[in-house]
Amino acid sequence: MFLNQLLVAGNETTRNAISHGMMALTDHPDQLELIYGNYDAHSRTAMEEIVRWATPVIHFRRTATEDTDINGFQVKQGEKVVMFYNSGNRDDRVFDNPHQFDVRRPMQPAQVGFGAGGPHFCLGANLARREMTVMFDEIRRRLPTLRIVSEPAYLQSNFINGIKRLDCAWD
Image 1 (cartoon, rainbow, N blue to C red):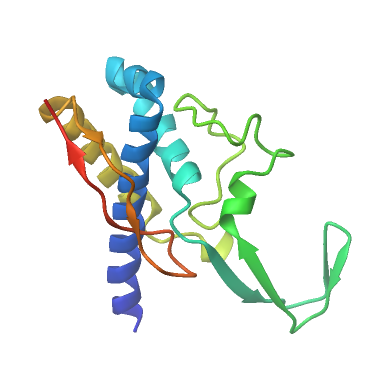
Image 2 (cartoon, one colour):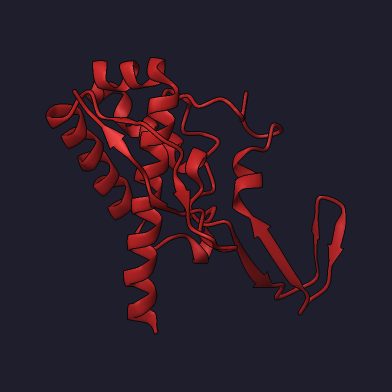
């Protein structure tokens, strides 16, 4: 089961972040121009912004191991807590203009698309970042006019913010 989780988690999340990222760059041509214009300067923050924007994993549930307080809400040991990552990645108390896609967004505070740190932080986060960086660099170099040309067909899931099909074109 652990190996299966590693294989599925690393595939689903990264490919969906790339798909959502390509949609975001198509929808925000000024951001595409920024990243393609100086890839070395912007690729690191762009990949974090793409994961923040896409938030491929919708939620996770955890069990409180001790009594705790979450923003004034008392959680008792043994109670279940659900974390909705998209909500965290759009929190206006944390991010300036959270509903704006900005490939230059500062990396701190960090987006929570990889699980927000701690013992449950995504084991493949660094690999995902690298795969995304390489993929967008290859698209930039080989197909610089690649763009999304239709609405995506979304995966019907309450766990993965996924895209099943995404039509694209290039000149």
